[in-house]
Image (cartoon, rainbow, N blue to C red; front, side, top):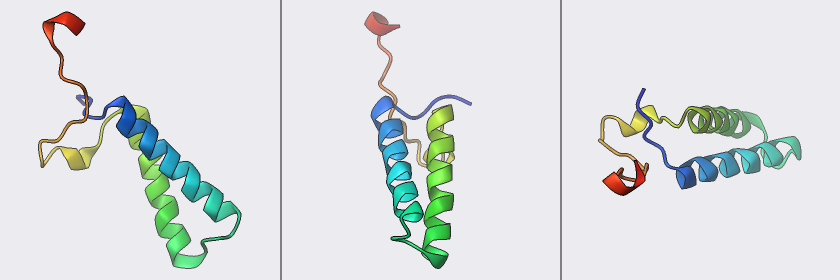
Length: 72
């Protein structure tokens, strides 16, 4: 797997997951919405840890900084 997520993208995903977790454990969100957002939060954390988002592939997206000869 080639990395396709930059640092800012990864941080934003983890922050969103933390917010969803706090909302879940304080029972602000419940029921089906809590389950759906919880699964999404787990996916966000997992993709952040591996720096790879499979949904970026079909669209050719990447938030990694471009490598130039100066920063190899």
